[in-house]
Image (tube, rainbow, N blue to C red):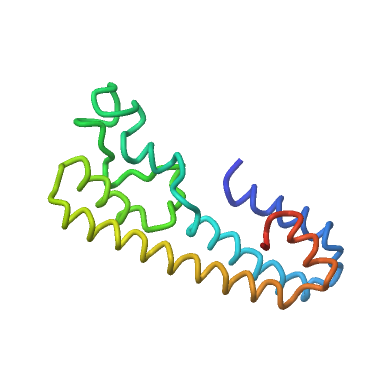
Length: 151
């Protein structure tokens, strides 16, 4: 099943749970819900996906995977192509700096850039969530919170 098919099924399920019979109302809710889901993927923290990016699939350097030194190919994304809270290229640049043992000043600069992008993405997520919340009834908002779509 493609990601688009999975998203379509999820939206259909949520439409039923939110009890939205009107197509125009659902179009607005679905548009804002989709924006929230996209921002959540972008703003998601690195977690263990970051560890995969740092060491490649084979574990720590010398573990037999991820290429020389266990680093990540900057063209490859961790966690199935999803964001790690910063652009994958920013995370790859940081990972490469650590792997290549660049000077601390360079690592610090790249680390701050990753954090800056993550902060920006978190703000975008909060804005998308507020725009989503604005079109929901109280009951729908409660369902969105229970479903983990809203804080």
